[in-house]
Image (cartoon, rainbow, N blue to C red; front, top):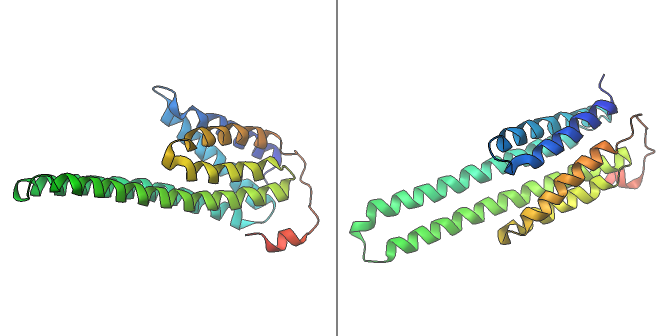
Length: 191
């Protein structure tokens, strides 16, 4: 049986490691390890409180994030390659328009999947907040959603950075003893 002490350790350390994504050399590696540790922590919370939807929402969000990146690169590179292959056969300037449209389409697909993933993360963290009594998780969920919404104008990177730092604080704030929360109307209507 897992304990909330393990959740605190895995989640807190995972959140700290995931902030290191921009560190030269080891950043991406640390970030991936951090993500795995956060996933383990969320899985443990899901198991402890017998709420499989919490973990399922996080997994859906990660899948959407991966799909968004793959879709962006697929659309971008297929557009560039397609325009290069037909560049000599079209009137001057039309292949540039095709590249621009391809990039815009790729960015739109990326952003839409990221926003949808942000909604799933927000739902998971709101539920974790209710179950653990750590209200900071609710704030983190909202910051993730706001961050991905604002990624289109690049301000979202700063918002997501703040969310990651607060995520570490929230995980370390989880009480070590499992406390059965009384049922409330919010629990029955939560997503």
